[in-house]
Image 1 (cartoon, rainbow, N blue to C red):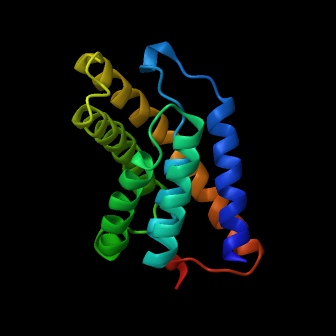
Image 2: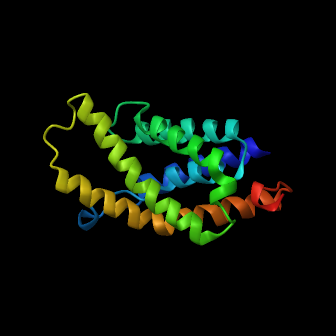
Length: 168
């Protein structure tokens, strides 16, 4: 049942992320629904499940954008493994913690993607002020979206009889 919920969340997150408009004020940042799904699985499931969710979320995100395939997945996997290993020290099953992590990972993912593009000379014409604006926009969107995705995912899992790490 975990796989079915993961697929539902990834497809729904990808659909919402692609359909919601980007705001120029926020550096054309898109709402990070897929990053939030990856965050949920990193904090609430075993490391293997978190890595699978991160890879799938990253591939879906890169497929919907002009990024080379695998860049977002690499960022999501790195952050997911770090969070999965430190969740006992960090996570108190609080939506506030999830919101802060959503904002932080939104900004760090944007920075990581920019750095990977720069290493391959694919971001030479992008000024850093624009990257900073997009980092701030993604952080702001992640602040609201991560708790929403967490609540939806935890509710779905409870309705089908699954428990997540915070309830064990």
